[in-house]
Image 1 (cartoon, rainbow, N blue to C red):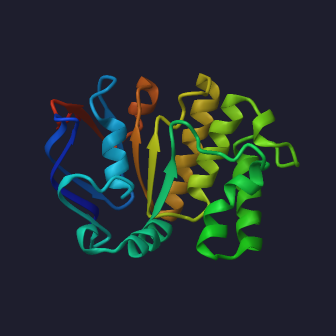
Image 2: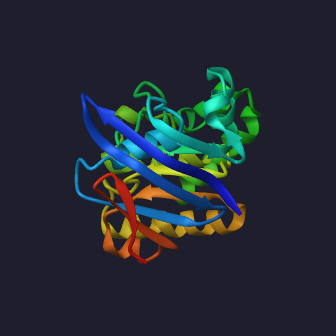
Length: 220
Protein backbone atom coordinates (compact mmCIF):
# COMPACT_ATOMS: atom_id res chain seq x y z
CA UNK A 1 0.00 0.00 0.00
CA UNK A 2 1.37 3.43 -0.91
CA UNK A 3 2.06 6.18 1.62
CA UNK A 4 3.13 8.81 -0.95
CA UNK A 5 1.82 9.45 -4.45
CA UNK A 6 3.52 12.19 -6.44
CA UNK A 7 2.56 12.84 -10.06
CA UNK A 8 3.81 15.22 -12.74
CA UNK A 9 6.00 17.13 -10.27
CA UNK A 10 7.89 20.02 -11.88
CA UNK A 11 9.96 22.70 -10.16
CA UNK A 12 11.91 25.59 -11.62
CA UNK A 13 14.31 28.14 -10.18
CA UNK A 14 14.85 31.42 -12.03
CA UNK A 15 13.55 29.90 -15.24
CA UNK A 16 15.67 26.75 -14.99
CA UNK A 17 13.67 23.54 -14.65
CA UNK A 18 15.09 21.17 -12.02
CA UNK A 19 12.26 18.64 -11.82
CA UNK A 20 10.37 17.85 -14.99
CA UNK A 21 7.07 15.97 -14.70
CA UNK A 22 8.41 13.55 -12.10
CA UNK A 23 6.27 10.63 -10.86
CA UNK A 24 6.88 8.71 -7.63
CA UNK A 25 5.05 6.14 -5.54
CA UNK A 26 6.40 5.21 -2.11
CA UNK A 27 5.12 2.15 -0.29
CA UNK A 28 4.58 1.60 3.43
CA UNK A 29 7.71 0.33 5.16
CA UNK A 30 10.10 0.46 2.19
CA UNK A 31 13.62 1.86 2.10
CA UNK A 32 13.86 4.01 -1.02
CA UNK A 33 17.29 5.40 -1.88
CA UNK A 34 17.66 8.40 -4.19
CA UNK A 35 20.94 9.01 -5.99
CA UNK A 36 22.17 11.48 -8.57
CA UNK A 37 24.89 13.97 -9.34
CA UNK A 38 25.30 17.09 -7.23
CA UNK A 39 22.85 19.83 -8.12
CA UNK A 40 20.28 17.70 -9.96
CA UNK A 41 17.49 18.45 -7.46
CA UNK A 42 17.59 15.69 -4.84
CA UNK A 43 17.21 18.07 -1.89
CA UNK A 44 14.50 19.95 -3.79
CA UNK A 45 12.57 16.72 -4.25
CA UNK A 46 12.81 15.91 -0.52
CA UNK A 47 11.61 19.42 0.33
CA UNK A 48 8.56 18.94 -1.90
CA UNK A 49 7.79 15.48 -0.50
CA UNK A 50 8.12 16.91 3.00
CA UNK A 51 5.66 19.73 2.12
CA UNK A 52 8.21 22.45 2.92
CA UNK A 53 8.39 23.54 -0.74
CA UNK A 54 4.94 24.24 -2.19
CA UNK A 55 6.07 26.18 -5.27
CA UNK A 56 5.81 23.23 -7.63
CA UNK A 57 3.54 22.08 -10.43
CA UNK A 58 1.86 18.70 -10.05
CA UNK A 59 0.10 16.70 -7.34
CA UNK A 60 1.26 15.24 -4.04
CA UNK A 61 -0.72 12.92 -1.79
CA UNK A 62 0.54 11.79 1.62
CA UNK A 63 -1.32 9.03 3.46
CA UNK A 64 -4.33 9.72 1.27
CA UNK A 65 -4.32 13.48 1.90
CA UNK A 66 -4.17 15.75 -1.15
CA UNK A 67 -1.61 18.33 0.01
CA UNK A 68 -2.79 20.83 -2.61
CA UNK A 69 -6.10 21.15 -0.74
CA UNK A 70 -4.62 21.69 2.72
CA UNK A 71 -4.15 25.02 4.48
CA UNK A 72 -0.81 25.85 6.10
CA UNK A 73 -2.06 24.80 9.54
CA UNK A 74 -3.37 21.52 8.13
CA UNK A 75 -0.06 20.85 6.40
CA UNK A 76 1.78 21.47 9.66
CA UNK A 77 -0.49 18.94 11.39
CA UNK A 78 0.14 16.43 8.60
CA UNK A 79 3.91 16.86 8.97
CA UNK A 80 3.72 16.30 12.73
CA UNK A 81 1.62 13.17 12.31
CA UNK A 82 3.33 11.45 9.38
CA UNK A 83 6.77 12.91 8.67
CA UNK A 84 10.21 12.83 10.25
CA UNK A 85 13.13 14.81 8.83
CA UNK A 86 16.91 14.54 8.82
CA UNK A 87 18.30 17.68 7.21
CA UNK A 88 21.67 17.85 5.49
CA UNK A 89 22.74 20.78 7.68
CA UNK A 90 21.08 19.28 10.80
CA UNK A 91 19.05 22.39 11.91
CA UNK A 92 19.93 21.81 15.56
CA UNK A 93 19.70 24.53 18.22
CA UNK A 94 23.27 24.92 19.42
CA UNK A 95 22.23 26.27 22.85
CA UNK A 96 20.31 23.06 23.67
CA UNK A 97 21.67 19.65 24.60
CA UNK A 98 21.05 16.48 22.59
CA UNK A 99 17.87 15.38 24.36
CA UNK A 100 16.38 18.88 24.21
CA UNK A 101 17.01 19.00 20.46
CA UNK A 102 15.57 15.55 19.88
CA UNK A 103 12.27 16.25 21.66
CA UNK A 104 11.64 19.58 19.88
CA UNK A 105 9.10 18.05 17.43
CA UNK A 106 7.13 16.75 20.41
CA UNK A 107 7.30 20.14 22.13
CA UNK A 108 5.86 21.81 19.03
CA UNK A 109 3.17 19.16 18.54
CA UNK A 110 2.03 19.21 22.17
CA UNK A 111 2.82 15.53 22.71
CA UNK A 112 3.85 13.62 25.83
CA UNK A 113 7.20 15.13 26.82
CA UNK A 114 7.99 12.54 29.49
CA UNK A 115 7.52 9.70 27.01
CA UNK A 116 9.44 11.62 24.33
CA UNK A 117 12.37 12.20 26.69
CA UNK A 118 12.51 8.48 27.48
CA UNK A 119 12.41 7.60 23.77
CA UNK A 120 15.06 10.21 23.02
CA UNK A 121 17.38 8.76 25.66
CA UNK A 122 16.92 5.25 24.23
CA UNK A 123 17.59 6.30 20.63
CA UNK A 124 20.60 8.45 21.54
CA UNK A 125 22.05 5.62 23.61
CA UNK A 126 21.68 3.24 20.66
CA UNK A 127 23.44 5.82 18.49
CA UNK A 128 26.23 6.28 21.08
CA UNK A 129 25.50 9.97 21.66
CA UNK A 130 25.98 11.46 25.12
CA UNK A 131 22.75 12.35 26.94
CA UNK A 132 24.21 14.76 29.51
CA UNK A 133 23.80 18.53 29.53
CA UNK A 134 26.52 19.13 26.90
CA UNK A 135 25.27 21.64 24.32
CA UNK A 136 25.19 20.38 20.75
CA UNK A 137 27.56 23.21 19.75
CA UNK A 138 30.26 21.28 21.64
CA UNK A 139 29.54 17.93 19.98
CA UNK A 140 31.48 16.59 17.01
CA UNK A 141 29.91 16.84 13.56
CA UNK A 142 29.27 13.09 13.59
CA UNK A 143 27.50 13.33 16.96
CA UNK A 144 25.37 16.22 15.71
CA UNK A 145 24.45 14.12 12.69
CA UNK A 146 23.23 11.33 14.96
CA UNK A 147 21.27 13.79 17.11
CA UNK A 148 19.54 14.97 13.92
CA UNK A 149 18.65 11.38 13.04
CA UNK A 150 17.27 10.75 16.53
CA UNK A 151 15.11 13.87 16.28
CA UNK A 152 13.67 12.62 13.00
CA UNK A 153 12.60 9.38 14.69
CA UNK A 154 11.24 10.60 18.03
CA UNK A 155 7.69 11.19 16.77
CA UNK A 156 7.54 7.65 15.33
CA UNK A 157 6.77 8.94 11.82
CA UNK A 158 5.22 6.99 8.96
CA UNK A 159 7.86 8.44 6.62
CA UNK A 160 11.45 9.43 7.38
CA UNK A 161 12.91 11.87 4.85
CA UNK A 162 16.68 12.00 5.12
CA UNK A 163 19.16 14.07 3.12
CA UNK A 164 22.47 12.18 3.26
CA UNK A 165 21.88 11.01 6.87
CA UNK A 166 25.32 9.37 7.21
CA UNK A 167 27.42 11.96 5.36
CA UNK A 168 29.38 12.95 8.49
CA UNK A 169 29.92 9.43 9.81
CA UNK A 170 32.81 7.01 9.37
CA UNK A 171 32.06 3.61 7.85
CA UNK A 172 31.60 1.84 11.19
CA UNK A 173 29.26 4.51 12.55
CA UNK A 174 27.36 4.53 9.26
CA UNK A 175 26.71 0.79 9.53
CA UNK A 176 25.60 1.16 13.17
CA UNK A 177 23.19 3.91 12.17
CA UNK A 178 21.58 1.91 9.38
CA UNK A 179 21.43 -1.24 11.49
CA UNK A 180 19.34 0.80 13.93
CA UNK A 181 17.21 2.32 11.17
CA UNK A 182 16.57 -1.12 9.66
CA UNK A 183 15.58 -2.48 13.07
CA UNK A 184 13.22 0.41 13.82
CA UNK A 185 11.77 0.42 10.31
CA UNK A 186 10.85 -3.26 10.55
CA UNK A 187 9.56 -2.79 14.09
CA UNK A 188 7.51 0.37 13.47
CA UNK A 189 6.74 0.01 9.75
CA UNK A 190 7.83 3.48 8.57
CA UNK A 191 9.18 4.18 5.10
CA UNK A 192 12.59 5.75 4.54
CA UNK A 193 13.24 8.07 1.61
CA UNK A 194 16.90 9.00 1.71
CA UNK A 195 19.48 10.65 -0.50
CA UNK A 196 22.34 8.14 -0.34
CA UNK A 197 25.78 7.93 -1.94
CA UNK A 198 27.46 5.16 0.08
CA UNK A 199 27.58 1.94 -1.98
CA UNK A 200 27.34 -0.29 1.10
CA UNK A 201 24.17 1.52 2.23
CA UNK A 202 22.65 1.47 -1.25
CA UNK A 203 22.87 -2.32 -1.08
CA UNK A 204 20.41 -2.23 1.82
CA UNK A 205 17.73 -0.33 -0.10
CA UNK A 206 14.56 -1.96 -1.42
CA UNK A 207 14.73 0.34 -4.44
CA UNK A 208 17.29 2.75 -5.85
CA UNK A 209 16.09 5.65 -7.99
CA UNK A 210 18.48 7.94 -9.83
CA UNK A 211 17.39 11.53 -10.36
CA UNK A 212 18.54 12.55 -13.82
CA UNK A 213 17.22 15.13 -16.29
CA UNK A 214 14.43 16.04 -13.86
CA UNK A 215 12.90 12.57 -13.54
CA UNK A 216 13.56 9.41 -11.55
CA UNK A 217 15.05 6.30 -13.15
CA UNK A 218 14.84 2.97 -11.34
CA UNK A 219 18.20 1.16 -11.16
CA UNK A 220 17.08 -1.99 -9.28
